[in-house]
Image (cartoon, rainbow, N blue to C red; front, side, top):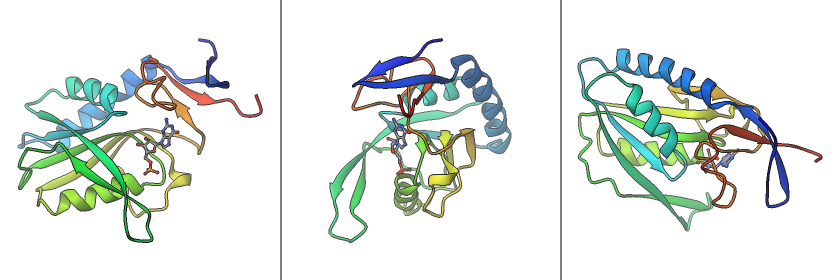
Length: 180
Ligand code: 5GP
């Protein structure tokens, strides 16, 4: 594997697709065990989570459903700054087992706001699955239930994660090379 270049930045190979696939198999087994007796609804947060959600969903060997949402940012009036509105959720999640599928949890603000919104709809269980988690960057009281990889506070791209809209189609995850 070699370095890739986008917008004048250099990225080095970080997590290979084979390693991601193997980890997803493990997560899928745990999810199946945890969700026994229910038909979980996976909610994929677009755009970044789509490769992870597709791979994870196909590995979960049980009856399950998947749907897709987007978080539309708008400038809120509160001091907290950017508020993200959920768009696209047409399913009734009341009394259901719901698994939010994210690409990355960084500060945790996005997932925290999303959880608060979804809790109002009274799901039976609300879990978070994220491919990547940066614990050092976390500023919110959230704890992802299913984590692919804990990573340091460095910018990554690939496997759904973008740099200004590009690089999502890289099969592997790459990390920004510092002082390049
Ligand atoms: P949070 O609200 O947890 O700070 O950030 C969540 C969002 O920030 C992610 O869904 C993602 O869009 C973006 N993000 C955070 N860290 C990274 C990163 O290292 N690489 C990329 N491509 N996006 C990131």
